[in-house]
Image (cartoon, rainbow, N blue to C red; front, side, top):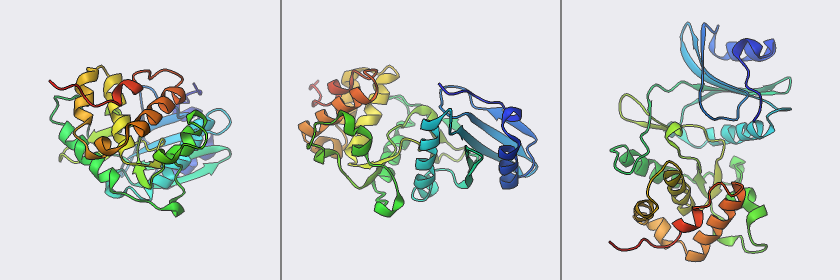
Length: 258
């Protein structure tokens, strides 16, 4: 894991870049929990708050690369995600400054009323077709090292994929609207792959595999994907996660009736 920095440990030039974007920083609330950024926090200024992510390219190259994807995604997600207020590279540090979103983490639980918002988000994301000029990575490109040579066709697609829809990455605003954040794992691919990624996240947080499989089967895109394509994605994701997500192949079959 890359080193985490406190606000005053960031280079003066980086702090200056942030303050030119949002104003003098009066207070800093660091983000807790797992993340790969060198610095991630909500900063408060005389005019409001902003969310800041910083990655030191030398020590956090994966985070810096993810920030490049986030910048590209911000151009196509519209009101579904927070506005990107400013971004740039300062002396080897990548900096993103976002609109701060008030709200609570979505309750990612099959019996939660919040799941209505999740279904809506899946539909909205799947409708976005960024086009090649958007500069977004492809799902095939990300998983190529774990795919059968010459058999990548089923995972090609032109739809936007978040691929990391966790509770922490979906914020329910006070007015009930949903904001989807942290697009560092964004990719272009077939829309059914997003259903698979979300199903894996549901299993990861402790949901019964059979219940998750029945829930996933509600989505026409997932049902229409060929068994071969679903298995190909599952096997590639097991390799991509370093065998941490071994349940992926168990999600690909139709649910058992009953």
